[in-house]
Amino acid sequence: MALRFTELAAEKMQSCLAQRGRGLGVRVWVVTSHDCDGLIYRLEFVDKVPDHVHVYESHGAKIFVDPKTLPYVDGSEIRYDAQDSGSGFVIDNPNVREHCGCGDSFYV
Image 1 (cartoon, rainbow, N blue to C red):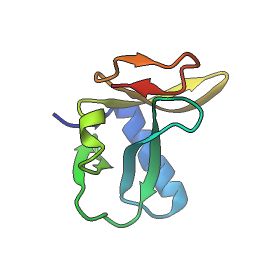
Image 2: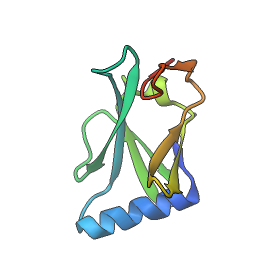
Image 3: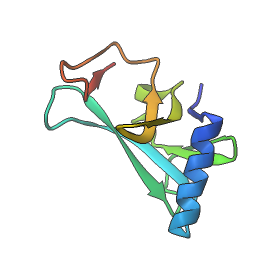
Image 4: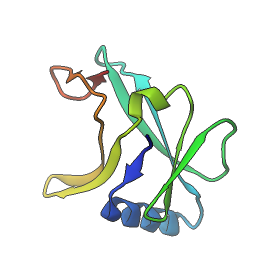
């Protein structure tokens, strides 16, 4: 499978990169949460292609994922969610079995 952006998320990502004045795309990875037992997502801009990553392109925007992270996020879709309380990128992950009690971390 792969990772993909919704069309709006790809547009927002391209806009963020343009505002930065540089960047090739975004790296997605997971780490163990310090507050909960589960995993949390991390996103960072990529200015240089890291070694040994999978690169996915969706609606003209690139997503970089290392081999260790891919099993946790394979098949996910990144969307942009704009609400009154704030906006940002959200990862819809079909591999998630459950979320922690506070909803900040997840389990696969």
